[in-house]
Amino acid sequence: LSVPAPVFVLNGPNLNLLGTREPHIYGAQSLADIEAACAPVAAELGLALTWRQTNHEGQLIDWLQEAGRLPAGAVILNPGGLTHTSVALRDAVAAIAPPVLEVHLSNPAAREPFRHHSFVSGVARGVIAGFGPAGYVLAVRACAGLLSSTGA
View (cartoon, one colour):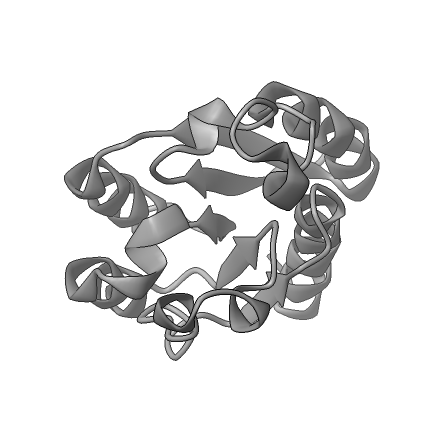
């Protein structure tokens, strides 16, 4: 039996409020609902997802560094509002070897001007935005493709 490839799914500030926070923008599903939708897809693709959420920038950076120490794997990162403000988070993404996929439920480019710039996008392997909760499933599938192409 092969060991499932590790994928960290890291979620930043306010994503713990999904389902109740501005559902007209972020949808009615909670983060737990999104995790439950991703689990069977990940299992089918041979991925082991580790879900985490924090409202603290330093915690996200610690988790990215932890992911960087994994022998093989990937990261799905929804940095929330830190997308637009955190050079430190950008530097943490740039410092690790595993591919990082940036995910957003909404499309930041179609929202307020201050959301148009991402510090993370330039160092992420790819960006998935605007597909709501389905964006996480797309990211899981993309991770599987990236890891299979590298032999991980």
